[in-house]
Length: 275
Length: 186
Image (cartoon, rainbow over all chains, first blue to last red; front, side, top):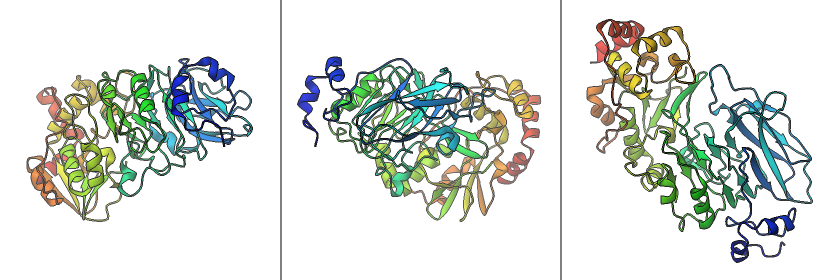
């Protein structure tokens, strides 16, 4: 049992402390909830913070270059992608169902926590382009925290937990073809400094023969963000006033939804569901 | 292209954009999906927006093959084309018609084919046991779907382009089957 688990006071005392983060890098005994666990990076690389027990990660990503990969610094995934059409600039939601826009990073060490970087690249793996969408719901093991800071414009971020949607709620999310999740309730923090999660458009488009909805937004329903972590996320997000989509932030089921301040986000043209 | 039918109890509603769909979808949510209704009415919206101003199509269950009677609202093809142009923020009528015919990309980034955009797709693409209503009878269509609450006016396009007679005729030619349907339904 990790020491200090659940101590919000300790977390608050060390908010933003790089020294503490460095000292405990790799330690599974440090409490990371409540918005004090990670230091945001703004280098256009998304980061996932994984506990020691998570040794394999399967996610889907959409990028402007059409390709991407992930690495924990020791292990590197295959390059995924190929469904993007540079000629027509089509992105769409198909990455959720198309296996070639998902990939797995395996073989990670079970003895320490780790940080996985998500990197947009070309077909050869040379970093280029921008991350446009991330879905973590294909993953079935714990993710502690997420840093999507510095990504500029992100169309969508889907990390709702496996217990989130049932019955009619299966249709509650924006991604009409993304209605199930394998992701546990484990994420305590999402940082998005300067990243706008939005989409301009009609909200309805077509891909091949099927209608797809693409309102844009974030869905972290069923995760473990407390009120301070939710407020930190609202504060981090970039202004979405210029974007005409729904720009939804779906936070239902997080422990902080009764004490958060959604007006911080609505002032930036987001609609907050579940708070 | 698979048409899409929203499930409204014992009926289906054919998703025909720019023909009152946002208002009816709002009614379907209120009538048949209390959990979704709760989620959208309790959401926190930016100033000036609410559950009755936003579109909620993405929240509804739907079918791509009708398994029960279908209700469809039909609009004058020329008026629907004008509304679709406004919705998609297109201003050049001739360019839009060219992109439709040539099946070229559209938008500032040369995005997906305009002809494949759901707002530009024919109204005659739906199948099944369809009961048609002209857009002037959208309230009757809602009633046929079992919706008892008053309809809201949602997503009304603004600044529709004016068409010359020649341009309107080209629209009618492109949507010839829709014109025939409209003449039957109006």
